[in-house]
Image 1: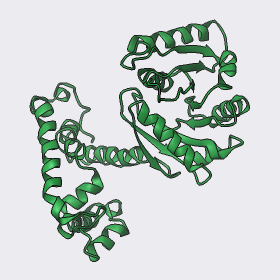
Image 2: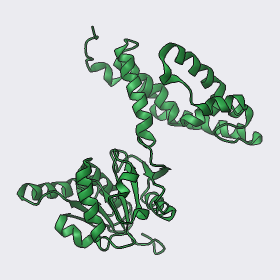
Image 3: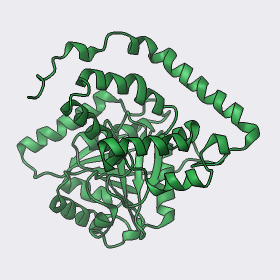
Image 4: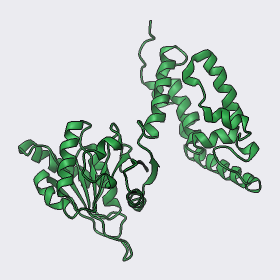
Length: 331
């Protein structure tokens, strides 16, 4: 931590896999963190707390890469209560049971300082539901980390209409400080990534069910094709890159043959009819300056080339999934 960086005390409530991952990410940035196991206190739970602390330390020694020694304190609910009073940010990472979250959020709310930021890591409940569990909803938001939390760069920050915009800025600044990439979304079921991945996973399972392809070939197609491409171009950027008219006509074809789940949303047709088809019109989901398009395309192609240079040999080799037996074909 440099002299210009403010010290931030972080408390993570919940010492399971998610809580431990968040603790590792915070420690890596040189920030002190308290990891609180809020289960009932008994001999087994004491052993669990010791194991949780050991796992975090084994994955990441305090202060690694930060230039500053960071401390990890693993404690029970009673010991954590005193630390809440000094906390700047509290991450709630308890099981996805609303009764458990209600108990923990009420407890946190009763013991944190008045300006502490409270963030649930829930992947199930909307921020509007979580905000109802705390007296001051203006300082409540969801910070949805992707597992493993210390390795995955993305964190989805979901705010309600009662969340103070300054608190959103405060959270995104903290996440950037510890090396994460925050994105902000409203209180919608599925956030961004889970909503997209649910569609892909269900369609992949449906293709196995329909006998379109084997699980191995579908997974390899995603790893070597869809996933590789979308790691460079996001889906909306890709629409603009290839042309919104292509998606428009492809959606009509697929809808006629596979059903309404492939029907394009109104914005795709609006962009099509308004000649906002992407690069070709210099307008789409993004706006493109004609004189900068060539440089933009060249830059993206360099990203593709670098990615394939790193992963190409692995992807061209026999898929490790080919050695895993698949279930017999369905009758």
